[in-house]
Figure 1 (cartoon, helix red, strand yellow):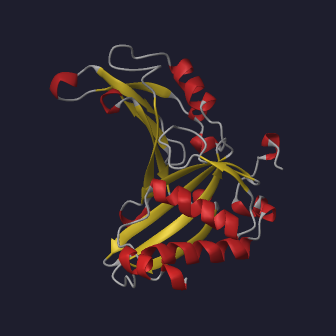
Figure 2 (cartoon, one colour):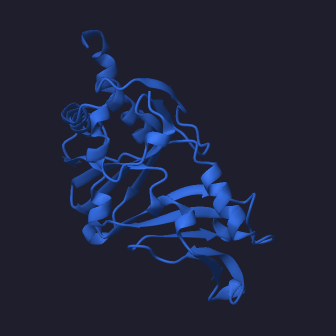
Length: 243
């Protein structure tokens, strides 16, 4: 079993010894393609949790428990390589960056009570009851094709740590929020930043620039066609006895 204090790596190569990289890459490609044999829509966050669980099991990584699609924040999969939080997102044009939605923070900041930066940062990190983010990021910029990149990044990685940033009030520029604090924002570090907007249930957003530093955490990638569905749920049901 892993020890939380041991999770200090800076790229995939530093922790890939905890699993068979070739096998997990193969299972990722098979599972994503298998999903698109039936579905044209992209893999979203809830589906990604189920697929990620399947990949782990088929890669001889023990799955101890899962959240089963629960919308509660925090850990989604508890496995032998660590506790996992599953997130999905879409690349911007030309894959320059992607945005990740995280916790709703109404308990520590809102329109009625803007809150204290130190308390907000503490609340964010206190909710990290997991070791690794499992990001599935897709690029849909080519018609009928989706490219998926799977990243495993330590939850304590400095670009994902709110304590790494300088926080300042986010001031509205128009409407009833003009010249009024409407949330919180950070400075940029290597193109990455964070933001909280009160009107969006004080949800934390992570803006992550797709730098070479971030790409080092890519575990696997694949490109699938979305116009070549070969089966449907009714056909699968009718074939159940032959499977």
